[in-house]
Every structure is written in C-alpha cells, then in structure tokens.
Length: 135
Image (cartoon, rainbow, N blue to C red; front, side):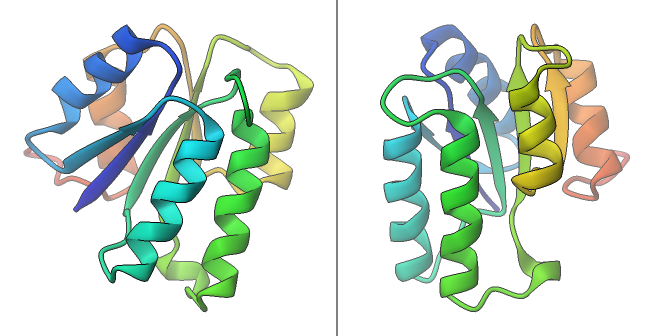
C-alpha cells in the first residue's frame, strides 16, 4: 500500500511516516497543492494511494479544499466509491466548521484529533481495515 502524508509541520510528517512505514510506502507533501499533484500523478502512474493523512490548516491550499479536489480527481479517473482511498484528517481543531465540512461535505473517511499518538493511529487503521488487527 502507498500512503501520502500531508502536513506543513515537519514533526507531524516525520512522526506519521515513522508509524506508517512498516505498513505502507510513504510519501509526504507540505501543503494541499503538493498533495493534489502527488495524488493525481500516482493515479496517472497506476500506483494510487490507498491512504492519505491530511492536516486541515496548511498554507497555499488548505486541507478541506485539497480533500475536495482529491475526491474530484478520483471521480474523474472513474474510481469506484468502494475503491476510493481512505483519507484521515488530523487536526488541532476539535469541532470547527472546517472539521465538519471535511467529514460530511468533503468525503473524509475519519478524523483524529492532534496531537495523535501511535496507539490511536494504529487502532484507526485497524478499524478501517487498512491493517490487520494483529499487525
């Protein structure tokens, strides 16, 4: 599986990559614009991302807009609903409008409150069926 980690904070990207590297080949993007380009390029190359971790608050293009564009790219490429990548939002926002929009309007798969820890990340990946429970 391939994973894309999208966060403007170096520590957050590094931490997620450290946790995910046993389960996925990880790429990183520092803003939504880079994420959109990487996501589209992966689909064009026939090696799509199965998992995206995305921060909401980022420069250039923020997380909600990038999320919407990624879902549009999947539609443009004819990706079936059940084959869409899992997008996990990670944010310091608890219950803001951006969080609501990402989850209910943007098509995010799930949400994890920052600061995230390894146990909650692995539990969420198990819940989503991305990794096996005994991983």
